[in-house]
Length: 53
Image (tube, rainbow, N blue to C red; front, side):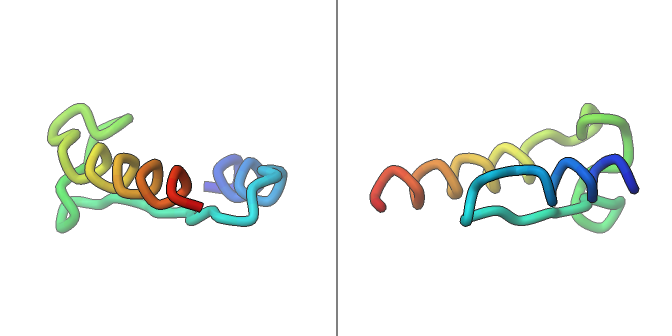
């Protein structure tokens, strides 16, 4: 988790969100391999939002 927090702080974007997916959110395995849809939807939504800025 500390690596993720360091990467988050180092990211230059002003639009950023650190999101941890757990079993309730649909992801318990590395890289959400067990259920990638929630993470993909979050990424797609962020891309759509920043594209319209």
